[in-house]
Image: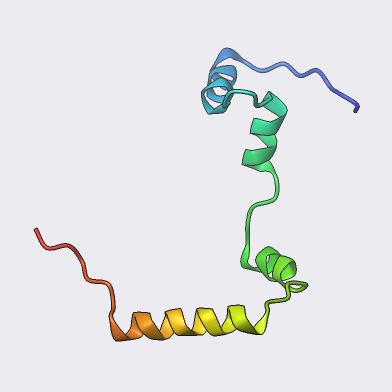
Length: 77
């Protein structure tokens, strides 16, 4: 893997290090922030090849119908 050395000021370094988790590199922090962001189009691309069995679809349908019959209620205080 090729690498480049960059110079950043202390304020930028502090921002990077505050966003860095254990075991994560600074490169990973930068890529997670500036890399491709999740979009509906990317989700559609990933789901395009997904195959769901009939029993799974039936189970999802039953859950949706059950929720319509007994909708969740907000907690009253």
